[in-house]
Length: 308
Image 1 (cartoon, rainbow, N blue to C red):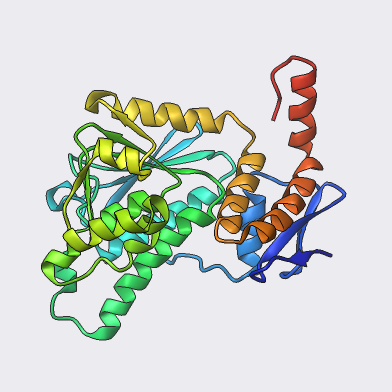
Image 2 (image 1 turned 180 degrees about the vertical axis):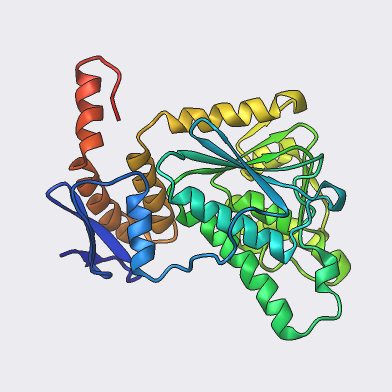
């Protein structure tokens, strides 16, 4: 029915306009609804469903057309990522991922700080199991960003430190104001930024990540742009509008095809070149059989706008 890639993960193989997942035995028939690729894979692999349900306490959620906006809402605490806030963000992202009406997600912070990282009050004088629960929630949140089909965009006004910087690095895209700064200062307080180093090192490379991790010194927005941590730098008064504009630009494409592309991107990124090509040629074969592929190609050849 399909085949696994070099890491034993499912490779989507086209079956009469459908996707079949070889190592999971899961099939999405009749073409894909928005996000069906990702939802099918992770449902088949036993993806965890968050227990937290709205209404939320430490975040707010809103819709701007086809864009979901998730706002961390602890400005008095510089949007410190408490255990509850991480669980709420995870739950809100999971719901957005299942909503066919959502085509992009923006994550932002209320007030000037994006996020100052973990709530340090939760990290003092606790037992090992408590720490493990907190860091597992953090890892689950970061993983959720990659696994939902919609692109997730960080909107960073000012400070993003430690796990807050990790959140920026974990997002698919990031837009920052000229006033934004980024740092992983855990080394200075005796708690090395070990989980933040995972997306950070993948975003900016080993040497630059090590410099941030070992010195704890912040970098400004232009440096973050040059290093590849963020995508765009804008003046503060245009930050939200520019972030939404980017989200809407993405939302104008086929949600099905964006979902296929995002899933394939994260699957191939850590493969060797030969394995990546083996995987992506199967993805493109399956993609080419999708209704939206036929519509998009036909629209281009006929010089008209596509109807997704």
